[in-house]
Image (cartoon, rainbow, N blue to C red):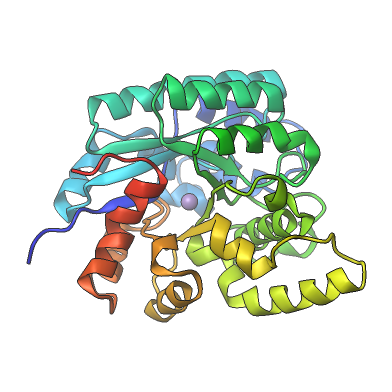
Amino acid sequence: MEKIRKIATEEAFSIPEVAEALKQVVRGPTSSLDRLLVSQIYDSKPGASGYGMLNFLERLLDVEDHRLREMNELGVDMHLLSLTAPGVQMFDADTATDLAALANDRLADICRRHPTRFAGLASFAPQSPRRAAKEMQRAIRSLKLNGFILNSHTNGEYLDDPKYWPILEAAEALDACLYIHPRAASDGLKGPLQDYGMDTAMWGFGIETGTHCVRMMTSGLFDRFPKLKICIGHMGEAIPFWLWRLNYMNTRSQKMGRSPRTQLTMAEYFQRNFFITTSGVEDHLALDYAIRKLGVDHVLWAIDYPYQPSKPAVDFMDTAPLSEPDRAKLYHLNAERLFHIAPL
Ligand code: MN
């Protein structure tokens, strides 16, 4: 069997300066639900329980050593890297702007050193939308990065807020996909998600990120930005499974005057403007459903390194009941097209 190129599309990294700033911010007076996870990863003492046990920080800060060896062992050709959640979105606007630029510079260096092994999604600071748009232009035009990463809400606000439109304008004009990655739920949403470990990937992340995407669709912003491309992980943050009901009820809600009038239906926006990745959902039934619902050109493979183990993610895709041309689309062709990664 001919070897198939494997591009993993939601792969996290960090830099020491961002890690240090996160440690400081969770020692301060933040009300953010991200504090639980962030303090366990960035400020844990030896022998601590919780996320501190999993050594994520070491693996986030390493790109060219252990990570590359593991990629070689498993035949993973490329990681599309992104600064890990919550990115720079817990910082003040100036710190966030500076750290996003620094992280983008480091990311571009890594990609230049290993052009067939690493590609990168650029960070920006939504706290300052105009400066964010400038950084987005620099990241694509000068640094040659492949798209953008945003970790859901910023200070409880979502991209449907017109203040963020310069960011959406920039992404659309640059033909660069915006990956909306989870972070913990905003203060307005966090109430019952704070117990039983529900704050993170088990439940809260999907609720937060799915809500973000539904706000974008129902607000009508895709009429203003029809060519905007949004990618979301975790098999679509439950939206594919919910799509029929979202579509039906939104149509009714528009007739009742409760939702803004839109040119297309919610299903049409989701199928036109959204792409999903398989990160952290290794379920062949869910994959089959997502492909049938969205079309095979809108589904991409991802591991979610280092938060998910790589080998099961590779095994999941190798054994998925797909035709070989479809497997190639999920493993690399869709990523090459969406993120402007040069074919081999
Ligand atoms: Mn992730």
